[in-house]
Length: 525
Image (cartoon, rainbow, N blue to C red):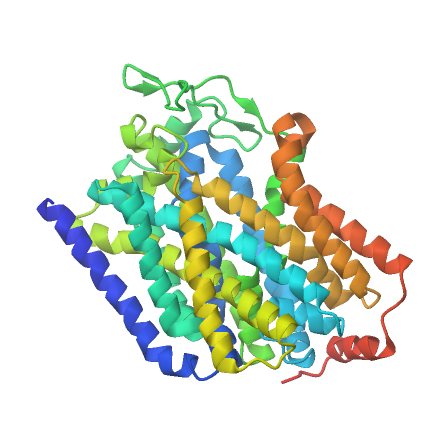
């Protein structure tokens, strides 16, 4: 191991020790009971709620996946995705946060998303609870796999070691950390990691722009590539049978620009719809200590999101200018290392290590959220809520959650075993799953009084199943079916909720009165 590599490693180890320290600090409070472990006792302040929500949401995808897409095929895919996410962030904090904070407290003091949806409709037979828990388990396992892929790519690129051994090491570290601290440690460390992430992005953005000779040179280079610097077309790298981009005379080869039409733009913007259904963000709404602090949180979250997304997309374009032909970046999967390559090239070793901690920060902040929520879905919702009918011993729930954490991590590692996995694709599928399964029913539950239990069940099933059907069966057909699966699945779920709710009996007077109480202006504590 070279001296520079050792310095990078030491800087990253120092960062990891700080994160573990946070977990140990909050460990005692977290172990007090399952509510503290899974929701932090509804004690999050506005800064922690906002920053931890965005950090846990964005993951290593922000520093590797999004810049990788921009590097590989230009602005269109990356920019429309970023615009959709920025809009989704703002609208979610604006219309969902306050209502969900109120309703989750009124509806049986719910501490998980499945709890809330089940309590919202006063279920006796916990069908909604079970469906929610199963979908969360499936999609969060996929999400966790994307984080493990990030760890594997990061460390194998940095240190020239085996992808598989580095992926396993990263997964083990995340698992240990989640075991220790629970939701409070996760949220507190996520706040710190959100700061590290945005500093890392802005640092590489400024240094990269300077190294490329200024923004004008970056744009001029991008405009030479057909479809690269456009929001209505997309660049198409010329690749061999193994997916490696070809080059001639030190210049990467591209074919004719591909079409990026109106329907594709709409479907890519629909990334923003996913926010209404992702549990790691919704949990922050439920956990904030006061409704009145949500306005400040919304501003913080939106600014962080816009700045970070814009920087990530631009870094991908800068990378294409500085490293037009680079073996490490010559495939769609390898292109996701552009942030790592730029950091190593532009910074002294110690600073590069600290910046690399930005990727590690993003990965840890997301994967611990995913593991924790998935474990709560099984232990808190399926085991305690359905099998034991809310009579399970709290210690047994906590112990079972740790077993489930281990199982989910193992399955996630199996999914992440393919070192050619593209982080962006893995995340986009899981994001669509959450958005279509939980987004529509969350909105209708909070804002449409006529929504009933039958509509909720039908809407969740139709949305979640359609994500699989569209992605695996319809999307490969291309044409109008080649759009992002979240958009059609979300629309279908909304239609099903309305039709089934209107075709079946109205909610009871008790459910209706509870809805009207929450819809009132008085703050509920």
